[in-house]
Length: 183
Image 1 (spheres, rainbow, N blue to C red):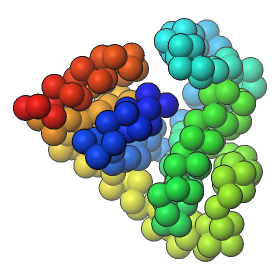
Image 2 (tube, rainbow, N blue to C red; image 1 turned 30 degrees about the vertical axis):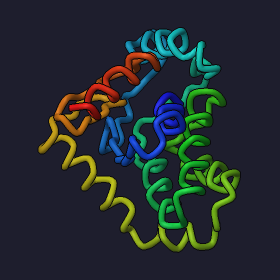
Image 3 (cartoon, rainbow, N blue to C red; image 1 turned 90 degrees about the horizontal axis):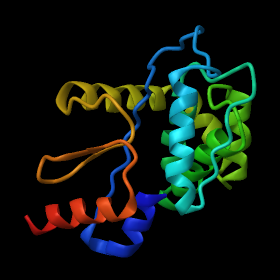
């Protein structure tokens, strides 16, 4: 949300290139939520995101997503349909996971979100079936880890080489990005 707001405010002075970054590139069946660092992080994020009107609902289901690859593949497939539908899906996937408690590792639940985004579902299914999206996600991941040393999301890479890691308030994003633009 903050990056979208920055894009609106800075216009052509800011270019955002979204990259896929699965925190777990393979499923981990031992992943849980309740009583873990994940729950503590959600509580911190919930507090930090309140000024932006973002709602974080603590995960209440027993099937906490054990990876994010299905959602990231969906985003790559929908991106082939254009920037506008990608933006809608991107936002809807975050809302589905953080605000609606949907399991973004579950292909059926991801498909529900794809449909809600207004994407061409027939084309989406064909693109997903090609397997290319998974390769693109894993390529983004490998590049981020090996070339840029990314280990966390969100990570914003500025043109001057600096990185912004983690949730940062809007004013701080603006200060850092504006400073990088001035060189």
